[in-house]
Amino acid sequence: MGRIIAVANQKGGVGKTTTSVNLSACLAYLGKKVLLMDTDPQGNATSGVGINKGDVNNCIYDILIDDVEAKKVILETKVENLHIIPATISLAGAEIELVSTISREVRLKRALEEVRDQYDFIIIDCPPSLGLLTINALTASDAILIPVQCEYYALEGLSQLLSTIRLVQKHLNHDLEIDGVLLTMFDARTNLGIQVIEEVKKYFQDKVYRTIIPRNVRLSEAPSHGEPIIIYDPKSRGAEVYLDLAKEVIKNV
Ligand SMILES: Nc1ncnc2c1ncn2[C@@H]1O[C@H](COP(=O)(O)OP(=O)(O)OP(=O)(O)O)[C@@H](O)[C@H]1O
Image 1 (cartoon, protein in one colour):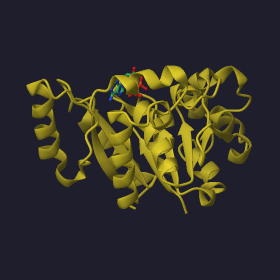
Image 2 (image 1 turned 90 degrees about the vertical axis):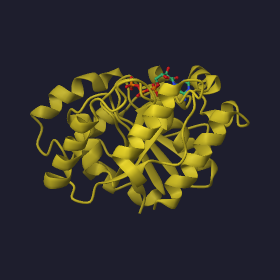
Image 3 (image 1 turned 30 degrees about the vertical axis):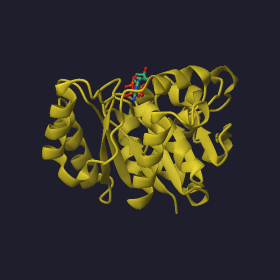
Image 4 (image 1 turned 45 degrees about the vertical axis):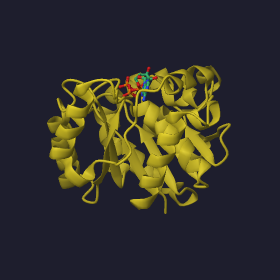
């Protein structure tokens, strides 16, 4: 049965989508069968693997709100072994519509049950909020990967995220664990980055991945070409580090 990992942090721009896309593609490159699920209405993970959002008929919205079966929404990508459940802007209304829906927190979990056996990993790219979309992702997942950007105020908001995780563990998903905290956009030229690493390690101890994602221009260019880094520039530092992360994630299973 596939391991489901939610990539979540309610803070915007910390590297959730970059990590979801590139970790998924690197796991697939290493021979794992992977389903990437985009639950962010911005749909950047969807376009990041080369899907034109304008061509998408059904998206995650239809699974959550209209009970469409997950297998009818899954698309292939240009990466071998990597499938995606896409998101489009229609998802923006889902948070509000979910409020009055029966079993609103467990809809994603139930939808994934029927496809889970077909994958080794299901990676969920969460939106930058702690609303019902993220709660659905955490309820459906075995583990959470928390990207933390190496910048001033890095730890700000994490206590809110941790208390949401505790609430989900208590009421909706007892087995949810932290797969790891991922330090992103590290810049070796500044002391600040090193201070943030120390602070995060002090707080999360052995839960911090050994792999640290540096700032890398190729990583920021790849989405505009609709390609994960392992295809866009397989020799880049960005591809190297996301492959290292994929190996750590496999080892954690
Ligand atoms: N390691 C990196 N090196 C350089 N640029 C990066 C790196 N990681 C992410 N970026 C860039 O930083 C921006 C924010 O990253 P990303 O979209 O992955 O964050 P996010 O947490 O998913 O954002 P949101 O909260 O809006 O969904 C993007 O423009 C992305 O290309």
